Length: 337
Ligand SMILES: Nc1ncnc2c1ncn2[C@@H]1O[C@H](COP(=O)(O)OP(=O)(O)OP(=O)(O)O)[C@@H](O)[C@H]1O
Ligand SMILES: [Mg+2]
Image (cartoon, rainbow, N blue to C red; front, side, top):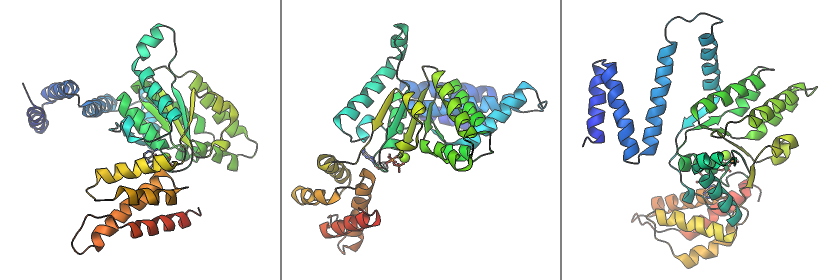
């Protein structure tokens, strides 16, 4: 049986020989091989490169202004301009720590999407509009990537801030283009910082633009195909229009960690490191972390490990508790907590 290495060698050879037919054949075989050997991310990414390149080839050559392909090409450009990232993800469900209800809802969502075809055959819709909210650094972006990883889908991270500050009056059109593109590719659309929509209010005196944009999004969401998942994230829920909020099937709050969750995060981080630590001493520090996000706690801990290592003459991998405590105090002061 061929190995991944064999395929890569063939692809390199055919690529350098400009032998497109054989190159495509080998690439197809590698994608199949990746699927069979459960390297789903690799398969998805290669498939996407292949699709993009076929599209580019279709577009190469002269195109008549005003023709359909001219407009398709324009759309491609817009979409590329406003997509921050188009990636597959390695994150899985056990990368996140959250409270029982959120865990239950997230895992149900994943199961539901895996059974989407069967559910649709029974006329049961799957939830495909999800909103994450909550304070900064508590896992909104992480949760979106986990869904992509668990569902083996590409995720389009939309730069809503850039769309909103693009030409006045074009926001709706550009958002529509992104929905169209993601639906064609069965991707996840991720509107990180969804509250950027609120920025429109700042320059939109008569509220015409804001209404247009909200209406467009409402329509797009209402017509969303079942196999497209839209995820939005915000740390300013109050900035969002009620009509918009009502459209989401699931609104999940990812909150600051409590004591147990902080301890779990710290223990996991330490266990993944090669540092020695004393659990009773760690437990004593946990209450000091109250009010800090997962991100901040992890940051202070990682910096404490680094400082402990660098400052130790013997290059010990021993966590210095005083250093860590000081970093926690500093972090709290910097955030005004
Ligand atoms: N609930 C969590 N469980 C485990 N790790 C977490 C969690 N939340 C955050 N982290 C850690 O903090 C990092 C940053 O989190 P993330 O980017 O998801 O925050 P966010 O809620 O999107 O914040 P922001 O509002 O600033 O965008 C993650 O990559 C992860 O390492
Ligand atoms: Mg985020």
